[in-house]
Image 1 (cartoon, rainbow, N blue to C red):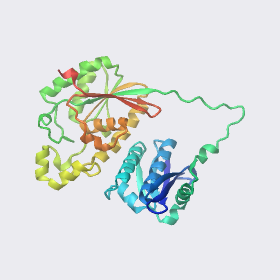
Image 2 (image 1 turned 135 degrees about the horizontal axis):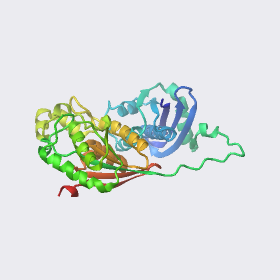
Image 3 (image 1 turned 30 degrees about the horizontal axis):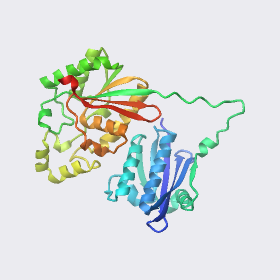
Image 4 (image 1 turned 180 degrees about the vertical axis):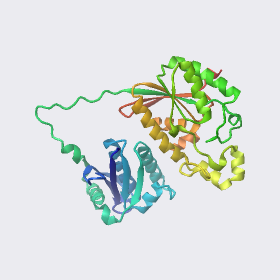
Length: 363
């Protein structure tokens, strides 16, 4: 059973804008024990920017303690809670950047939810924020400080860094692909061209040292994965979190058709990664489940080389996670059908993108 944390966060500014600081702490949700405390100055800023600083610091502290933990964030800022819950739009550029940071960290944790609390119930985080504004930063892990090593016990050697390589293969063409139609949860098979592309990808995969094949269970990815895995002599396992974005009422439409039939909804969906397609999902929804899939992959195949057969949006989001960019990158990267991308993930948290949209095997 995963651990449950409560993050309490706050921020303040003496002048608004003025000298500002944040405070955050992490508690064990079951015992109430404080596990980590953070407080730091953010220079000259507004209250809201400082509050976002506290949120980022609290989430990072929770991630450092246990990436698999579920987290409840409690703040007395209704603005931050509503914005991070996706109900209010974020307009301030500094707050947008901090919110992206917070979402990136949250995707690496288990479930994260946001709760507004009265100011009186957030006094510990408020005290830390005031300490920061008084020029007294805090970086304390009480749980770690409570562990005392006996004189004759030596600390354990740090775990060796291992690298896991994921080769990311987009499925081959279907009848939707040449017309660039929204293709989400449909059950379309590979076209004749798509099957030929999958066979070419299988030949390309022979020399990549692949030890496992993991795929989205949708028909077009399942067929692609089975063709490639047949060449490699490997079984295929499936992960529901790797399926394509659910485009809802936009399914099967071209971009022009979507704008004609759903002008406002299509524009909002394409302009804001937190807005869902009408009757479907948002990019941010997909990002959350792709982060879960990534954690499972890196746990189950640590130090190995894995072929991941998926779709445009999940692959772009895996690349975004490796590059440390926001989810908005999905609108700035193009991936051909049956293209190959590669990422090396180190157990110390670093990642390296080695290949993007390679189609040399299709020529």
